[in-house]
Structure formats: structure tokens, C-alpha cells
Length: 200
Image 1: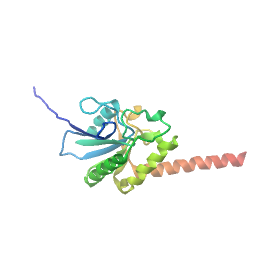
Image 2: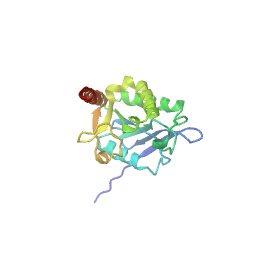
Image 3: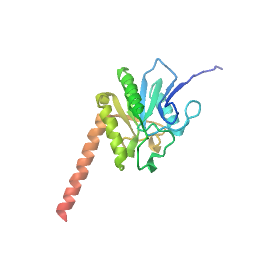
Image 4: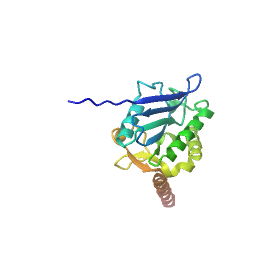
């Protein structure tokens, strides 16, 4: 019989009034590489308790061989249902992007570190969220060589950790491969629309 012990060190960075959470770091093995994960928005659960998204991220990042991760978000405002938001004013501030860039910069310098975009399809059908995505992509374009997104073993790409098909296992797809896939998908849709117009 033997005892196996693990210690998870957790640290969160908040605004002074604690209405924004900029970064949540969890570390269990400092000898292993780290991952920067960028999702949508934070919950109020932080150190001991964890919401389902954070728990799924922890499980999958550990399974992929990382010893720590930093969780950041497109929006840093705590406990906001972004799917119901029409005006994104106040959902992030100047510290949000500063912390995102600092985490990505640190991970980029780690030979085996990875930056994982995990906000999924939120931005596809919402102009305001799409504008926020463009800001983040512009901010982080210099890191794209080490950026990945989550896909499943089927045909679904750029998924959020809560997506049922990836809750128990992530497949990391290089961001550049996803962008190429997306461009080809959009071209195929455009070609179909053009054929449809010609036939009418």
C-alpha cells in the first residue's frame, strides 16, 4: 500500500474591486511545460472550488502532459452570461489584454509551452463578439506559431471545453491549420451560393 500526494497551487489576479478576473493559474508540476488557455469569461469560483469549464481544462491540460496552465478570457468581467449580452462595454478593461499578452509571451518563450484558443464558435454569429475576437487575434498574431485550438476526432473544429465531444479528450489543432480549413470551408460555401444563383 502506498500514498500518492499531489499539491495544486492556485493563484488568481483580480481588479482592485474584484469585479474582473484577469488570470487564473494552476500549477502541479513546475518541471513540466505550461499552457495559456484563452476562453470566454470567468466565473466567481476561483481557488478551491472550480466551475465545470475550469475543471475540464485542468483535466485535459494535465492529460496532455502540462504541469500548469494560465486561464484567461476574451472578457474579464466575472459571472457574465455573454450569450445574452448585446453591449460588450465594460466586459474587459486595459488590464485584460495586458495580462493576456503577458501570459502568451511567457508561454511562447517556453520551448514546449502552448497557447490554446478555447472560446469556440461564440464569435461567429455575434458582431460584437466578433469584433472582440479580431482585437485578440491582432494582439496575439506574433504568437500564432505556438497557438492551437481544440477539435474532436470527428469533423468539428475550434471547440469550447464544454463541447460534449471534447470534454474528456482534446485534440490540439495548430491555429494555422484551422485558419486554412476555415478559409477552404468559406470558399466552398461561396462557390455553392454562386452556383445556386446561376441556376435560378
